[in-house]
Length: 454
Image (cartoon, rainbow, N blue to C red):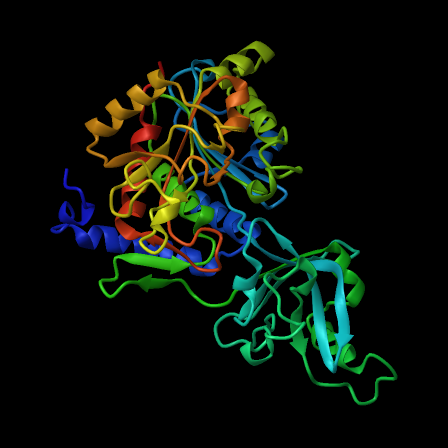
């Protein structure tokens, strides 16, 4: 295997580019958890997956080879292909998250300041706040009316008008207004500058409210809404050689897409396989749609029950004997910031999928530390399928660290390791990945789904 994978793919570059064209389109058109879940449902249904809720209502029984999916509050999804082996012999799980750092609208966002209508916000996840200023942002989300009607909300894509956060010009940064860093309360979106002439008060706000009313939205509806401000525009090829992709939300939608597409390649597996896409990882996997909830466990119960295999003991054995790839990105060595990395042990572009045996920070605090027996079996499987991979860490030992959903799933006693695509600019508005790493990660997930459980 060459040190740079492009040398291996010199005669098959078209395969890589073709796969990544699909990924780039996915990235451009799916910028929220709800949008990613809708996309996954559409792909699953086209490939023969049935809705679990429908199967439960119809009391349909599942057998080996059947395909089923379950959705949690439109923001998480689990897709299963039933294997020939009993559930209690374990299942192979590839799990990613589909939320990304962003800026959310508050429940009462609209206000006026200095002749502008503004939108008050609360940032979500770990961001460098200054990166979100002076750039075009789009609004994506859903508004739910009191009667339950849902209004999908997208403004700022294609040729639509955008919003954004202003920044202070450098000429005036020498005085008391100079800021080393923005505060969360500084990240307010400019929504408009026109006034409603006949309004008695709040004329600028009233003008924007009239625009929203044309979409069936009242001011109070923002309380029952999820509106996210995300970078406007499409993902693009990056580099003069087009070897990379730059786009918003690649942490962790690059692993979500590759895991989903890999599952679609599986037919009649020996062991049940599952692709799991969840919400809230960027803020600790909390809440009803995060990995800390009981939703995944409850879903496994329902699927086992339709297979005629459920008991509490069988469930515990299933989860305990399973294998999982916590499919999340890692930081690639950055040529502009090499001091933060150990190039000998950290991930590099164009070397394949990255496996982090442990994450955490400062002495492995909060880490899942994968067992060597499991890693050895993985190595064997990947070598058999000629998949390129790298054993990595994330930055220098005392530099910082990170976390994933790995430690949460490990509580069941299953084998878990972090495995995903190396990324530059992680948590920035525009992140960068290598096309060949994306394709090799897809191949690795296919190999893992077909892996024997010991």
